[in-house]
Image (tube, rainbow, N blue to C red):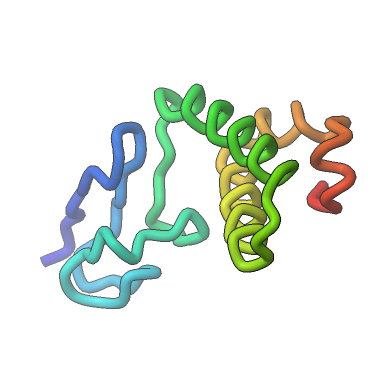
Length: 105
């Protein structure tokens, strides 16, 4: 079957993996728990953009106070993912001192 399964990962985020193709979640049934924004089948819709901005701000705030190194690494990874979702959002943070201090852009 050469069709696609569109699965809602999160409001505004869709997996559009073709049948039989491989993605971040492997091959076969789509595993939403393993969804990754670096996957070529990941589609962030424009309606997701406001949540991305809120998430970035929340992560930057948390990174300013976090003392647990493992949590800090996780927050940084999440921030990198969020910044990569929309080029215009990433561009808007190019000159943000908080992001520059973290060495992300």
